[in-house]
Length: 293
Image (cartoon, rainbow, N blue to C red; front, side, top):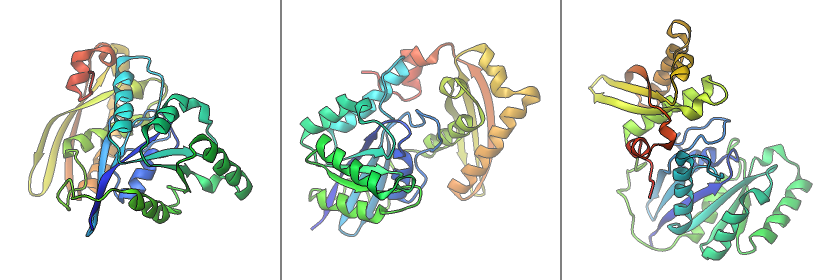
């Protein structure tokens, strides 16, 4: 008997969805920073065994859209509610349930097997956790509730077994050695974007998008040229920094991460260009790989 299915990870920003997916997949596929809206696309991670294949999908955090980029991000979330074999609804020990009332209503109506993952239990205590489990039994009565700490790798194995029990029987969707549906170009742009989230404050990270201009794989080195697009001229100077120092720091950190990810040498060139208000431009959003319809 072979089991296979799509397991979609849904939840509010900053509850640890990307950390959880990386723990389940065992690879750093989703970028992780402490800022909200880190994940902008649906990112798939594929785990295969002799008699199973799980296709995990990490989605952007649930939010009320205030521009077209965020509308597209929410389409990834609502899409994940319809094409899942199992839904992992990720919450943590401090967030409020009312923030995602509409999505929780849709999950209840979907009839899709659901696992509520209470993450960050390392920050809680047994009594508080017990009360949380009871609360989630009321909110999603049909769901299985699994407490974990993705960061500390606690109960990830137990969660994996719970997911496996709920998977339908079926053949593998992808060759067994496939790790993700995304390209190296995609991961290069995500790693650069993660560094921007880490090194810049306030609005800057949310106004940036990365485009890989060229990606050449050579036997000993990968040569990558990338453009960082910002929404306004004033942001360009902030990203570059005094005498290019800020951009240099981003480039160095991204190159080191890329070398670790690819397990080979990387030559990385970064450029900065202005694309006026790209977050509300249909043409630009499509170019950057967002779905608008």
